[in-house]
Length: 120
Image (cartoon, rainbow, N blue to C red; front, top):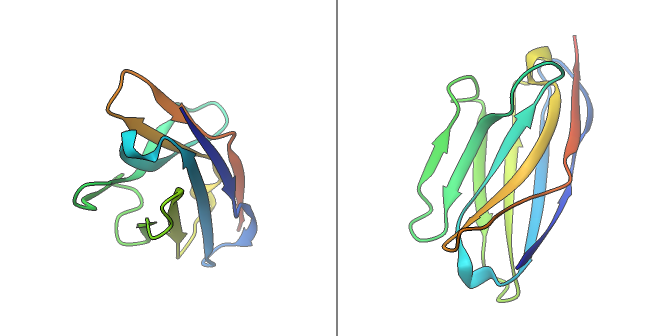
């Protein structure tokens, strides 16, 4: 089992920046990858970015490439923290952002979600 605590959402003007954080604790040895997804009203949840724990290989959704950066801090033996640096934000980036943890077991885990609102 792992526990996820998200932070960093809020309101920002178009063109601005925000950084999201997700602190993951518990059985961190079971983590294969961590990432962020988002869901806007009336739309399906979509991939934003993921990062693997083995090689820190990253993957981005096409709409955020070049603007968002995912990174991971694993220096603390008791937790991994995944960050999402979001630059050049647009109104279409407004959504609830969810932290996601993929494990080597059959289970995956979701955070509670944090709202990001970009005003035009």
